[in-house]
Image (cartoon, rainbow, N blue to C red; front, side, top):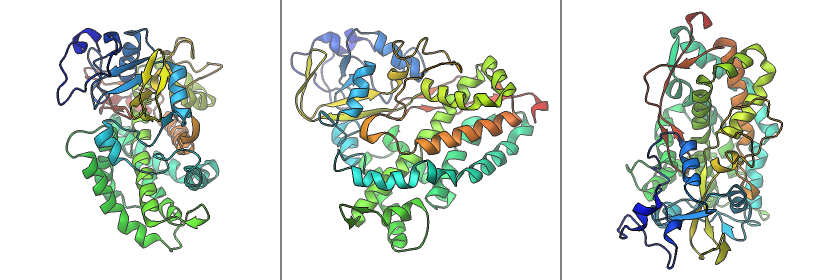
Length: 416
C-alpha cells in the first residue's frame, strides 16, 4: 500500500497504465482481492490505506486499473448517484469480471431497475421474512446443540456456513446437496481463487439455473425462484433471460454475505468478554449487538462505472473508469462514529452503509437481521461465554465481499 514502490513500476500485463498526468501520490499498490501486507485484518487494512494519503480518491493499477474512494461522504455518494456512477459494471477487472456479471436488478440503473427490484422487495422484505423465523430458530438451535457439548467448534465451518446457507436454500427450495457447487460459484465473483474465469462461473450458473426455472414457470410453488418466474415488469411477464439473470443475482447475494458477516461478528465477540457478559446478563442487548455489529463490521467494497467525465477531489474520472467504494470506510470514519473501532452497545447513533445506499440498497437486509438476532438469542442461551482457541493465525479475505478464514472458539464445559 505504499505509493513510492508502485508509482515507479513499469506497466505489465498485470498492472495497468496510470491515467495521463496522474500525480504519483495518487497511485497506490492495493489489490482489492489480496489487500493484506502487515495486517490480516480486513477493516484495519482499509483504514491503513485511508491513513496513507490525504486524498479522497486514489488509483490502483491492479485488476485492470481503477479508482478507490476513501472518503465516507464520497463512498455514499458513489452508491447513491447513478447519474454519475452506474452499476452497469460492479466488479473489477471490468473487462472480465465486470462483463461476466450482467445480472439484474444490480446491473440496471433507475428507473429501469425499479420494476425488477419490486419483485425482490415483495419477496424479501420484512413481512415475507417473518414466516421464515420459526424455521430459522429451529435450525439455529439444532446446529448449536450439535456441538455445544464438545466445548469448542470451528465456527465458520460448523455454523456460519450452515445456518444462512441452509435457510437460503429453503427460500429458493433447492436441495442442500447443491450448496458446495453454488457457494463455490458465488465466491468466484466476490473472492475469486483462480480456479475458473468469471465467464466460466456465469456459464455454470446458467447451466444449473435454466432447467430449474423452466420447471417452475407456471407451477404453484411458493419459493423465491418460482416467484421470480411469475414476475412482471412494464406490464408484461419477465422473459426467460430476465428471470435467469435475476435468479443468479439472488443466488450470488444469498450465498455469501451473511456467512462472512456472522464470522466477523463472532470473531470480534470472542475477543470481547465484557460485551459477552453484558449480553448474557441482559437479552435486551441482543438488538443493539446486531446493530453495532452491522455498524462495526461492513464487508462490501463494490464497484461502479463512471457514466461521463466527472471531477472528484481535484482529478478527472473518465467515462468508463471504474471506482471501488468500500463500505468499511463509512462506518470506520471517526467523523461518522466516535472511536469507530470500539464495539459499543450504548451508541446513540450508528452511521454506516453496510447495506449500501441509494437504489440498490441490499434487499436481503431483513433476512440478515432476522438471522443474526435469532442466532445470538439461541447462542447466548447455550453458550454465554466463549473465546478464541489460543495459538491460531486469524486471517481475513479480501474481495468485493470480505471474508473470514475458518477459526476455532471454545467455552467452558458447563455452558452446555
